[in-house]
Amino acid sequence: MTVERVKDRLSAEIGELATISDADPPAVTRVVFTPTDLKARAWLRARCEQAGLAMRQDPIGNLFARWQGSDPDAPAIGTGSHIDAIPNAGKYDGVVGVLGGLEAIRTLQLRGFRPRHSIELLVFTSEEPTRFGVGCLGSRLLSGSLSADAARKLVDRDGNTVEQARRNAGLSGELENVKLPDDYYKAFVELHIEQGPLLEQHKVPVGIVTRIAAPASLRVFFEGAGGHAGAVLMADRKDALCAAAELILTIEDSARNSGAPDTVATVGMCDIFPGAVNSIPSRVQLSVDIRDTNLSRRDALLHALGNACDAIQAKRRVAIRQELLNADAPAECAPAIVEALSKACRKLRLPSLPMVSRAYHDSLFMSRIAHVAMLFIPCRNGYSHRPDEYASPEDIANGTLVLAETLAALSA
Ligand code: GLV
Ligand code: MN
Ligand code: MN
Image (tube, rainbow, N blue to C red; front, side):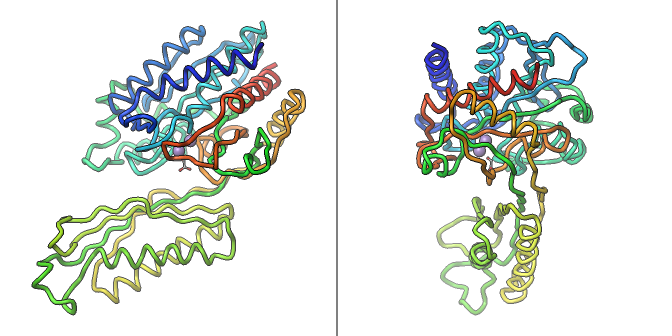
């Protein structure tokens, strides 16, 4: 029976891919262009080739696996997601959309379906911002949301540029050639775990995304004065970490008091220099991640952050500099694809819930050049970006079959 086959194969493949990781199980860590990421890509490529898909990789490493349609000139139907994973992540974020997309294609092949529009599985490079600070590197370039010049110059913590890292990963060609023409895809559909608790709470197996929230991220640099932890009196200090701490709490406060529960803000990284127990921190770098479903409310928080930097700098005599990495608009999903997803759910007798995606996804950027929509499946307790992230084989199989129906309808 189809559901059982899909369940078994996907569980086995998700488990196998999770073993290609730089963390001890059950955690998964797979950072872009590391040897582990390259090994995972090779593993995936072999699976796509076994399915008879034609492979191509672009200069940033986005992988395209195409099932050729009977009308090769018609725009393709795209699906896919990412296989990079943040440090200490789980097995399912991104992977369900990639292996589920491949399984949807294999399911249609087994049924003897013949697409008119080609169906293409897309595996995006570096959806996660772990290494270069900016998420969705591959889809930003594909959609022209980030210029080749700006992408080349992004640096990791060790000072390696994207340009060096991709060349070391064996990628050639110019980043200028990554952008896809606006008529390349007729539609793009991404399957993903919800990363929130709503589907589980409502006991609904499928979420149909209508909107993706607007993300922004920054780095904030603090420069004060170091010194001896015993000898420098409190009145004489310019402690960069104390200034950073004040900013962190101000950001939290502004997000909590934005007037809407949709505003979220996170400081997830804090680098302290020199980082010694008996030394006053002289330099600190913070990462700030701010999101909202409403663009002007998100921008108001960015503005409040700027004002807080000015006030803390004056009060504490610590120099503060902000570097805006991205501030993206939200995306609306295309009504026709949303309807195709609803129809597929009805056909499979699966209840569905309309939802907003608070996480960003490559679909946010694909929406700049194509009609997009997303479908979510439940994940236990809404956990994601942690090792105990879990989606049941049954929910994954259901999502995959909804995706297969949708791809079939869109590609006919
Ligand atoms: C994607 O991983 C996100 O942070 O929303
Ligand atoms: Mn993620
Ligand atoms: Mn993801």
